[in-house]
Length: 74
Image 1 (cartoon, rainbow, N blue to C red):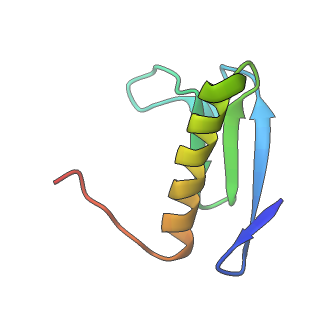
Image 2: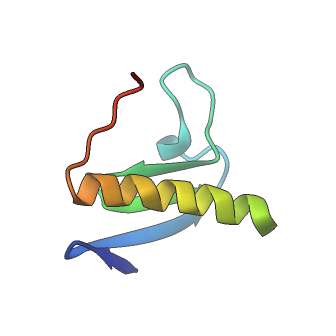
């Protein structure tokens, strides 16, 4: 558990085919940040520097959600 801007977030290491890791196109991601559940879901098979990069990326999403920051692809 950790807090960002007063919001409590959790990290859940889960299986590669967890429903929260499923993308709209049917493929699976290695991680996902869910603002509704305040949870970062991460593939439990990740390790080492790749795990650190993915976790940093998802924590960035959590911070964006917690501070209502919206970045577009443009």
